[in-house]
Image 1 (cartoon, helix red, strand yellow):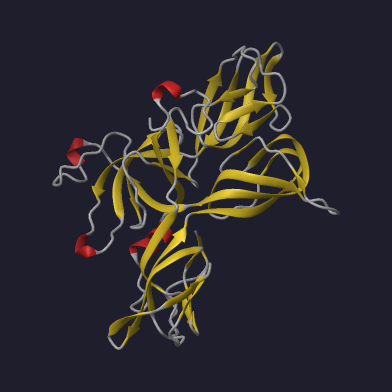
Image 2 (cartoon, rainbow, N blue to C red):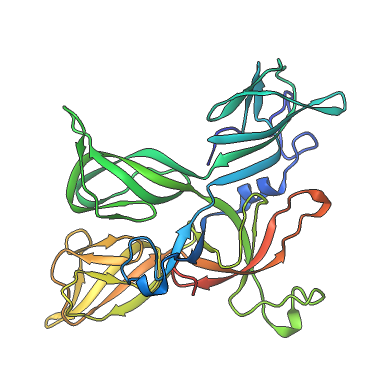
Length: 371
């Protein structure tokens, strides 16, 4: 899902918004003031408990991650009308449920003829000043083509829209002359692709991409003398936050939300494990950036260099390119905070109209688990 139109436009010269002709909806307020995040469900793996293995490629410690594939957008006016083409504010469109023309105080259903990525065609001829109210669906998960360049690098950071990378389909190196060359990759993070060997030049990749959502949230004081919801008997545990999402998101208890802008710093000591593996896992994820890795040697403290001695592998692991420090090491890194939905404050739809979802959420160490 991506924004392709401004929305709320009118044929009148109005300088500021919101106003009487272009009001600001709850969803628009969240889009303007909320923070970008990724949201998904963690559900039990369908494998029998006796068949589950620690390194299963399909689940995370017995849990599978699923995403909402479509978002319903309703009670929204068309971004613009040109002839018999009606343009929406978000794309790519997967389905048009309703399109109603405001005409002389009434609403008239329009006949949908053909649906394109960012607009659809109707049978009736329209004027540019016509107002069309829409209810339509857009895709939240897409396969898109991205490009990234590197110079003797293990990791490439392609330019991405607002969202997160959830899978890699294929990667090709684009030479200056000749056909594209397939390239093997070993992993990926929310915004990068990891390779088993150093790569150079321009690379083009087809990736699976999930669009970001916008979430509003606030913290609470758990002092008994200052309960924010005393009359409603709602209680918040220490560390819980109140969150709010738009009406089109089918969020449930146990879902995980990871903020994409906020970052926290953490330091921890990693013990040396003589198991022959060159990969170590950290406590908090997804990692945004590794600040430094420090070990104690005979001559004093040693600072290891990223890209030469180690690289970030996936969202929560460090892959060593050289021998790991035998005495263990300290790692300092920044990560995106994640939260688990613990309950709902308001989930009903009054007046038979969809309303934003207001819920409680609590921090978790990783976006790969419920606890």
